[in-house]
Image (tube, rainbow, N blue to C red; front, top):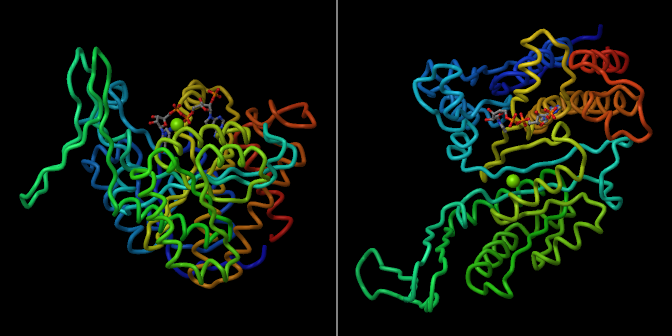
Length: 404
Ligand code: NAP
Ligand code: MG
């Protein structure tokens, strides 16, 4: 075997739970360690270790990403009441992704992996449609009230330093109804816009942003203006990278997306991103093909798969039954992190290696070896599916042929 490729600076590694924890080890043993020499700053975010450390390990991992700039994360259990019982947890710890996101002040981008024999549901789609979702405010931090009879609903702002209150009539109710107050902050919208610009520059893809500023002249108009201002600041860099910015009405954006071939970052307000990311994910085929990266406004990157720990498959595995779990998004989390490390370190061979792994994955599937979720939608049809480990082995064999 050829000499191992050296990665200059460390990558922060966050281990996780259930089926994805098992796949994680396979990926390291079969696709990473045999080919590259890399210092991994390891944090075990598995539910037991989070519980043992009172979840401090999650905070430490987030701080390590801040220090080293690049992280890769396995899927983790976000405990609910039944998980607390299942693992005898001290408490219902918060979502690790939420904790990391708030420490890095980041935005999540979801990008599907395109494979020739896994056709998207929408014929026009040829390249990935990447969704950037603003993850703060709007209906997710709203105040709402059911109104049970006639009366006046008002919007009131009371300045902190004293001075005149501002009040606005929302609606004079003649009978029962419902009312909601939304908010967002300039700081959050600005950092969302910055992260989107960072990402589009890093991927060299066009940036779309859609809102409903014809109807919501102030609220949605505020988003549009903050975006326009941030884009204005990066005009030269965007021009140089060939990145175009388009602002559209959200309904126009939706219509355009269905006719576009893809290859753009679609920045979405919180609710639009929630809804549209599920539409795009199912349109591209499988959750196992959806990657996710958290980008902070100051340029830190954390890569993961968009799916969870695939609990149902894990329980089958525990019963001793064979599984056919798709490892593609998890593999691409690793290659995303390795390629970004190479880019930041200016080490071309490291970037090339990451791309070689991605290429091996895609060619393996195009060659007809794939897990069950893909077999069901592959075109042309394939006769059988690969088991979890068989698929990763097939990728490793192909990779060895190219660089071994
Ligand atoms: P999930 O792990 O995403 O799996 C839901 C279903 O989607 C699976 O049962 C499977 O369908 C299919 N699926 C997802 N990923 C797949 C893959 N790689 N290969 C093949 N099929 C795949 O969601 P969940 O079961 O609702 O959640 C399990 C745990 O994950 C929860 O504790 C949740 O808190 C956690 N979670 C973590 C993250 C994260 O860390 N980013 C995100 C979401 C959820 P079939 O059963 O039909 O085969
Ligand atoms: Mg959703």
